[in-house]
Image (spheres, helix red, strand yellow):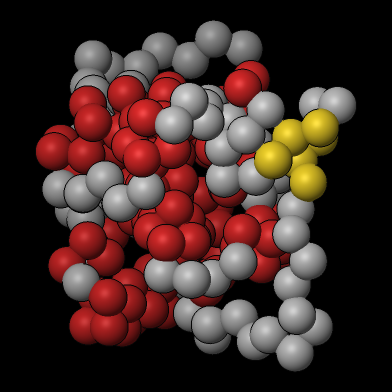
Length: 205
């Protein structure tokens, strides 16, 4: 199903996906184990966790797209990718990235069963995607919310049973999600500030 998109950096899929991937890598560099990050995303409904996804896409590709989009999105590339690339670790295609890969599958390290994931882990992963999806709708990257939801579901694997990012925003409530973004911004920085467009998302009647 082709979707017409406006000529904007990252178009739709990369523009929505990159804040999610960059935040996941930042969380990894803070010391949260990759399997814990991946599990949180899969629990939300993503088909693959973001750390495994970054390795699968290729860290060289992630770095290239990230450098192009980060200034436009007001984000910074987290530390760690360049040093891996300098060592030749590009992810699945080289046999090592954030994970070691054997026979096409990641070998994920064991996590201490007593490890407690940060309480805001899921929000830090998912809310950047929702925030940028709202901005894309505001900027008319696509014609309407239904096309945006379809594009993000088919293009990124966004939890299909949730109906897409804009449908999820409507179901959860813009006030609720903006409050959670504000809490993240206060705790982790201005990259979580609400993007333009939240006031335009009306609940479905």
